[in-house]
Amino acid sequence: MAKDKVKLLLNLVASAITCLPRGGDIEVGIGGPLEAPRFAFRCRGTGARPPQYLTEFVAGEQPPQLDAMTIQAYYTWRLATTAGMRLEIAKDGADILISIQSDREWRVLAEKVLGDKALAADPNFATNIERVKRRAETDGRVAKAFGTLNVDAVEQKLAAADIAFGRVNGPGELAHHPHLRRITIGSPNGPLSYPAPAAIWAGETRRYGPVPAVGEHSEKIRAEFGAKTR
Image 1 (cartoon, rainbow, N blue to C red):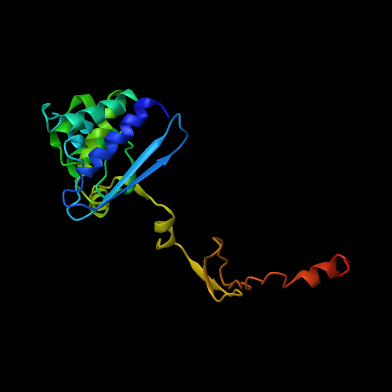
Image 2 (spheres, rainbow, N blue to C red):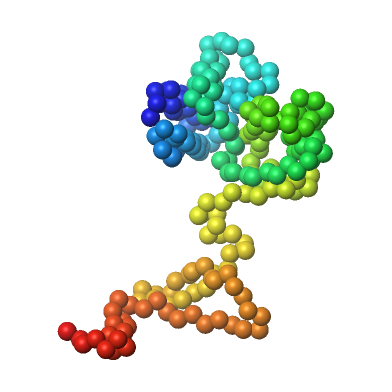
């Protein structure tokens, strides 16, 4: 792993500590190849908050003046820029995919979801071309606003504004998704709850057999192929 990315990782740990003024737990995940790693930090604890000062630098709007309190956050932000990595901050760590399909929808997002009327009217962000030119700042503005809300509040705002979005779920969320049908099948160790096959036939109820025990059908399979039992 390149030295600048190692420095960034260590400084992100320091920034994560500022998220937990009353203490708590910090989980650090590292994924991807060493040449292009991805870092993920999850901070849990009473009074957990977005990392102090770093949110303002990521957003790119009116960053705080440099002093002894803000220099570490500034250095972390600069390290990410130098390493070619983008910083994203979310209050509860959930990922939400947003689809802005027109400039009108961007204005709605800025005003009604982000709560920033000035951003909605800013010509530097008025069109998709301008927003792409300022991709880092655009992402930072959105991340700053979302970083102050939990995922349920963000989803409610997006739904009320009629903005297309979807939550990016992991295995844990998928296991409890309201549209996931489950079936119960037997096994040598007792009943098992299992995701149901996706296909549904009208007027027909599918039957599911139990999971066989090890060797349960061995003799039948050998007989079918004419094999002799040793």
